[in-house]
Length: 170
Length: 360
Image (cartoon, rainbow over all chains, first blue to last red):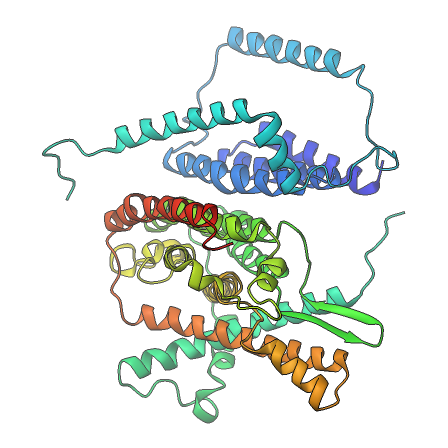
């Protein structure tokens, strides 16, 4: 394990904990952005440059901006913070704990493959053109279906934002 | 043991680019006033030094010595973090811009570029999309409703115009087939054949990109986040001294980077007309060595690139002092109902032209 990996893992874990434990929601969002940066660093270490860049652009650059946008509008102070009943807290802890157990159970037998010293390792695997070929040849149908999903969301947004007949904003 | 990267030519290039960005941003403040004065038929700054050339220095002294002010109820840490973030993101994007071709000394060849990665364009796009955080965090942390409105405007404006910007870039990518800015530059001029700059093949894409660049850098006519007629000073209402200075500085660095990206993507970057003919002429009839002729071409190309960049910076300022500001709903309508459909149309046209072999 390289020192860079350890550093990135440390940053990722610490900032992920920060997301959960920060009292101020804006701080939580900023910690989450830091987490995304640490994850992008991991992608770079795995030689997946495109994934790293897209992770930054889509998650840190667009989705988190919208998150922050919404949170800024809400006046979330300590006194307006909702207090959940104890039963809900216990249920959440059990649900989260069982997800953790499932993740650990799923990952415990994983064998690391394709180390950088391996002869079969392809250093170009994460490059843009490779990814494009895989997406448009091997996984064409799922890819197109996902794009239809986005189209549906887009049409819905347009319908919501469309001006009704006779409506005037200014 | 952590291996530190060797302090090679790349770090020198990065340092020079960093210093140049700051110098250009400094003198942009001067150029802005001179151009404003010229367009409004005034004298402009002429007190500090010959032709007022020391005006940026005087401004810097003023900025640093002003009182630092923290508004009541502000989130102090984020209030300081905001301008720092604006500055960091502004400075980061110039790392991948190819400022020149290779120069060679003996057996060593250097690229006049900070880092050459094959995701160069995505890097620029990613850093630009992060640029809005500085404005948003600063505006929110000020605990002022005008600042907050400015921050919210900045966020929605950036998100809206990023879409059209990304789609106008896709048309360029479809022609170039690479994300590396150096490759895109080199493809715009090939020795021994007629090869035009991308502006000829992508006129519509360039116009869309240019409009979006104005919106992303928060320049007039899209400077709604700091619209002083409605929002006092927008997101930097509560800022004073050098923290305000950093915000203004970041804006000028963003203009510099946007100009550089437009020059590289659409105006041939460090290429200039007849460069290969000049090189061959120097080698064949003047008896130059190939390497030194290539070095001369590179230096001339870098000068040419900066000439293009300064031309675009002038264009940014020219527009600022010519066009009035948009209304906010007009801004959103332009982004979503005109620029994005135009960008999609541009992609379709480009795809068709590539399919029928008109352009490659």
